[in-house]
Image 1 (cartoon, chains in turn cyan, blue):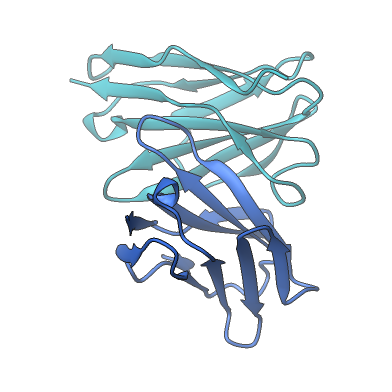
Image 2 (tube, rainbow over the protein chains, first blue to last red; image 1 turned 90 degrees about the vertical axis):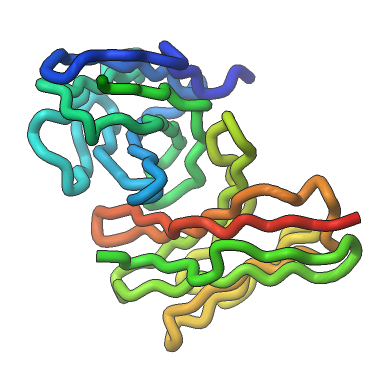
Length: 114
Length: 110
């Protein structure tokens, strides 16, 4: 069974630009959640999608948005990039949702904002 | 605010001995707890979980203990192996939220 796939692995963007990250979940998993990992803040929850609907949302500004498609693939968009958005972005899929079943993480997208 | 805390940033243990990693939480609405292991350049890997209706869950060398009154959980690894060397994150979910601890770097020395 293929694991969670995130693309691209690395991205370099300039302040003010926008970026879209992609996540393909494990087959059969309907929940996809996104996380930001930084050395200072650790791993922080961004949002969760389940069957194309945003189910939960963390404490991030509206510049961070996402969506989920009918095949459960998900994208995350960050607009008007700031230097502080430089981080490792992880997505995770689960069968029953993040509150009910274990998360299976991808290897992340490393975003650098210059 | 740090609703999930791992107060030990690092832990060093001899091969064959027990490793005990600790985690504290503050939100009494959390009802599902997990431990993840992370190697460099990889995403976290699920290790073991426990729901709030239990106080212990065991899977091979890994055992998670939950003390709800103290809002504390711990992960025991027995016996520890050099391949266990990694960063371990505890996580808590509930109340439509998911929180992670900052991680503990475990080093198992041969």
